[in-house]
Length: 112
Image 1: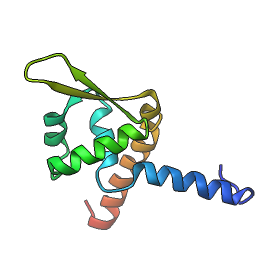
Image 2: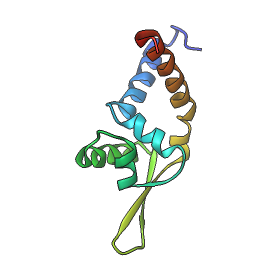
Image 3: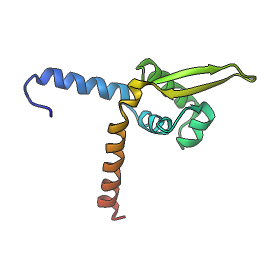
């Protein structure tokens, strides 16, 4: 559990986590990849509302943070497959908890 002792380190850790996961789309992309590897088009369909340009940018950022792996396939036409790294898989509990909280929040706010 977090304590107030060492607060600057705790704040820095949370800041780093938020930077790695910032934005509207990254957690949704990670959620889509949690069930297995996906190609770009598959991700674009599963993460509805995201543009190709934004998806490409977010995938590069997730790769830079070592959360996903980009694997070019030896096919024609060339394809690329994305999957979670072990580091990315370490977020599964966070994503599950966020999902559960989101369901409760939706129920409380919308009464559904």
